[in-house]
Amino acid sequence: MTADFKTWAEAAPELVAVAAGRQPADLVIRGGKLVNVQSREVLDGWQVAVKGGRFAYVGPDASHCIGADTEVVEAEGRYLVPGLCDGHMHIESGMLTPAEFARAVTPHGTTVMFTDPHEIANVLGLEGVRLMHDEALLQPVSIFTQMPSCAPSAPGLETTGFEISPEDVAEAMAWPGIIGLGEMMNFPGVSAGDPKMLAEIAATQRAGKTVGGHYASPDLGPAFHAYVAGGPADDHEGTGEADAIMRVRQGMRSMMRLGSAWYDVESQITAVTEKGLDPRNFILCTDDCHSGTLVQDGHMNRVVRHAIACGCEPLIALQMATVNTATHFGLERELGSIAPGRRADVILTSDLKALPIEKVWAKGVLVAENGKVSVDFPHLDWPEHARKTVNLGKELAAADFVITAPEGKNTVRARVIGVVENQAPTKALVEDLPVVDGVAEGADGTCQIALVERHRGTGGVTNGFVKGFGYEGRMAMASTVAHDSHHMIVVGTDREMMARAANRLGEVGGGVTVWRDGEELALVELPIAGLMSDSPASEVAQKAAAMVQAMEACGCTLNNAYMQHSLLALVVIPELRISDLGLVDVTKFELTELFEEGTT
Image (cartoon, rainbow, N blue to C red; front, side, top):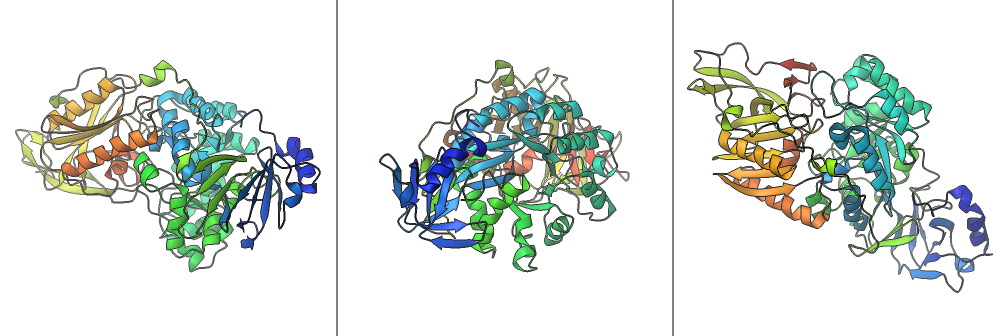
C-alpha cells in the first residue's frame, strides 16, 4: 500500500465528514445501478462518493457530497460492480513481473490479487519472495502476497534452488504485504503430522493470517480429514462436485479455478447451482494464466463470465469473485464490496452477463478505460543475479539424452507420463517401447522427456518418456518454467534437438524455446529467475503465441499444451512426474524405476 493511502481508521474523520455533507468528495459516480454483493441485489440509481481512495457514501443520493472540485462521473445506466478479486494465483505463470501482470489484468477489472510466489521461491528463496512482495506494493491496484510454504514441494523427491523454512515463514509474516501462507502442497506431510509443515502453519495462525490449501488427491477419506485438521483454510485442487462439497462441509472455502489450462469451474459449480449449497463459501480464481490468455481473453472477468455460462446467477458469480474472497482473507471490511470505508475499487459495465469492462477505478483512481490503462505501473530494480539463474554446468550433447536399455533387451516396458488435456493430473501409463542399438526409443506417440538441473550447475539430466503431445518429426521444446522446482524440462523426439534447445536457454538466461530440424522456431525470453519477463504483456503474449504456433507445427494439438509441459515436474500432483532425482510415483510419493519388470 502506498504511503499516502490511509487506513480506514486514519481516513474515518474525512469519510464521516463527506458522508454527512460537511466536506466535498473527490469523486461521485451517479446515474447507474449499484451491484451490492453484501445483500446480493441491484440498487437502481444508487450513487457513491469517494474520498481519499475509500468509499465515503453509498446510497440513493450523493448530491450533498458534491463540491466545486468534486469529479462527477455519469454512469449512464451502467452497473457499478466491485473490483474483481483473484483468490489464488501465481504471477510468474503469466511470464510477467508483478508490475506487468498488474498492467495486463487491470483493464479486465481485476483490482485485487492474492498471489503465491512459490515459483520464484524455488529459484531465489526468501529474497525472491521479498522482491515480488516489494514490487507488488508499488502497484496502483491491491496485490497481497502469500508466503510460499513448500520449497521443495515434496522433500526428498526433488532438489530446489533454495528451501523455505518455518523461520522464513515466521519472518515473512511481519512484512506489510503478506496476507497468509501459500498453498500447502505437501499434503501427505500435513496428513502425516510432519513437524516442519505444521510449524509453518502454526507460524501463520499465530500471526492471525490465512493458510492456503492444496489437496491434490481424490482420496476424501481419513487422509483428507487429517489434512483439514492441520489448518489449511481453502483448496483449489478440486476437480469435481464431490470435491467442492466435501471441502465446504469441512469448513474450508472451495476455490474453483479457470486458468489457461485448468477448467474446474463447470464440474464443481453444480454444488451451488444444482445441490443448493451456500454460495458464500465458494471462491473463483485463476491459479495459472499465461500472457496470451490475459491479453486475448481476460482474467477474472473471464472466470465470472464462464461461471455464469455454467448456470450460476450473475450476482452469485460476482460474490464469488469479490466479497467471498475478501471475507476469506479477513478483508471484508477493507475491500470486495461497494460499501463505506472500503477501498474504492469499482467497475463500470453495461452487461452483468457479458461483463464488458468499460471503466475501472482502484482506490478511487481511474486506472483503466475501454481496455487501456491510464496510470503507471512502477517496476522494481531487479538485481543482476536474479537474471543469471540458469546454470547448466556444461554444454549439453545428444548423448546426455540417451536412455540405455537393460543389456540384451529388444524391447522395454517403460513407465510413461500421460498428459491429460485441460487438467493438472497426469496418467501413469505403461508402454512397450523398442530398443535400437541398446537405446530405448519412443514410439507411437511416446517421446522423450528430460529434467535438466539448472540451479547448481551439476550437469545432471534425468531422462524418461511422455505421451500425449502428438509431436512428430525431429523436434524439441525446452522450458525453465518447470513447476515447482523450476529446473529445465525438455520434451522431444530427437536428442540432438533436445540438446540444442537446452543449451539455447542456457545462453539467454531462461525461457521457452521450440526447435525443429536444426532450427529455432520460437523463443520466449524469461530472464528474471528463468520465469518472468519485465517486458509488456502484449510483447510477451506475441512471443508466446509464436511458441504455440511452433508447437502446433510440430504436431501438437492440445489446448494450452505449454501449461501441461510446465507441470510435468510438479511432484505433488498425481500420478506420474519427473524430477532431478528420478521418476516420481505421486500416488505413493516415492521414486520409481523407469522400466518395469517384464522387459524382454
